[in-house]
Image (spheres, rainbow, N blue to C red):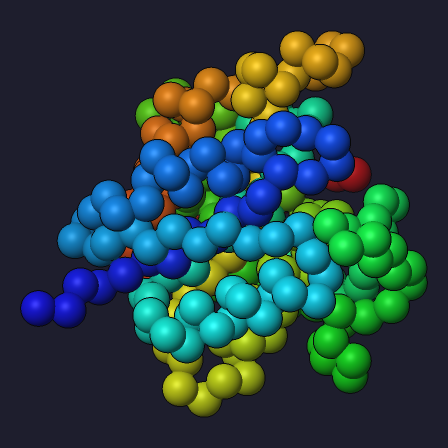
Length: 218
């Protein structure tokens, strides 16, 4: 019997960190089943040229119902469900191969932006109801996370055989990372796992988002 699948993608450590919470989440949740779907883990390099291609290949190979990419956002205090991926790379630091592109598109000739196709407002609300701090975010940055998010959405929108929904969530540092940074927030691994599990469950349950106020003024 073929399992229905959720592809959960995270990243290797970068920027001098010894761990990446998104990578740790893959070890914790990979192989688990949520709402009848098997979690397929995929660890991506922090690399502008390889990460997106590896993700798209994995989507084509396992045909998931949902794709959720998770990235580290040091300094944030909540799960941040990203609403939009922009067609822009402007790297503050180099990737794992020393590449540091500035002011260039993720996909030449692609749309200016793509919206997440996951019910991010419902996912945030479900996390809040379970006591997991969460927020909506309107910027996934301009580094590898945003580039992968954009390539992900571009792939599922332009590949005729694909029929899955996808999105991106940024997560805080783990406590063992935050102690090395002055006045930086963190989230425990248990709470991260709980929140990502709830987010996946909500994404599988709802194909459309709710009419919930989620904007901000700045």
